[in-house]
Length: 128
Image 1 (cartoon, helix red, strand yellow):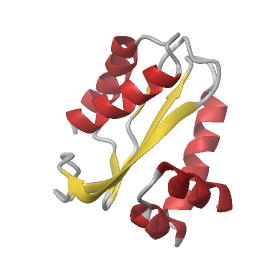
Image 2 (tube, one colour):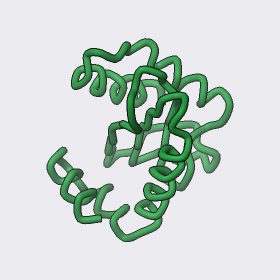
Image 3 (tube, helix red, strand yellow):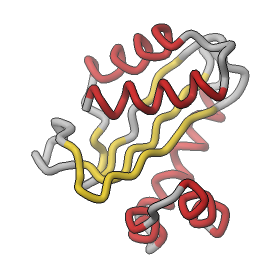
């Protein structure tokens, strides 16, 4: 779990160098302490409030082999969506979560799991 979280945060920090990697990690780990974010079999959505972001933002990671995540079902996670929101945009955050849950309950979730490149992941999300 920690490796996947660090990897996704590092990707966001590379794309957005104005955000502090350690601050983002702290936000995610604070939420994980409150509640494990393995929300569905094979899927985790680590998320946190990080004041410097100006909108909901995030990253997605796909692991065909699966990673141990400490999910309630004890099974590995194959799709990890990481989300950040500021301390104010609660409604927008919930809207993104609702859309994400609908996606993950649809046939597109299987297509995501089968994606092997960032472009394939993007294509599945754009089609959804």
